Length: 101
Image (cartoon, rainbow, N blue to C red; front, side):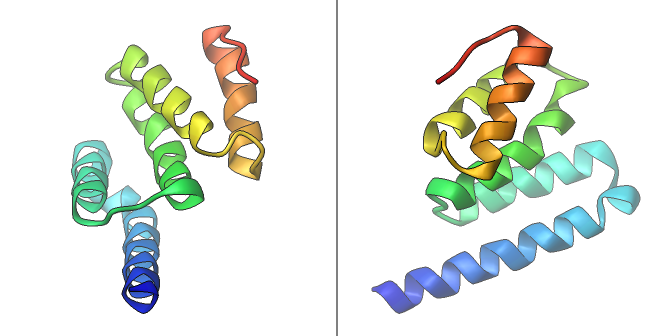
């Protein structure tokens, strides 16, 4: 139930912070693989999922601009009014010339 959901969310956020901390050592490909694994393992939703996608998008950008844009669009839709959501809207406008509401 709710307690299991909270525990899973907490574990996912710990994993994300470990991935962020190790990005310099792991390199781009390994970091992206770890993020993909995190997304598959945990059923993140709302702002938690948005936060992971927002972190992931710039890493994808170097390899695949279109996938980066799609990742940002998905992340924005999750919660347009959150802090991340507003930053994502600004990025979409500046980098991809895409307006979102």
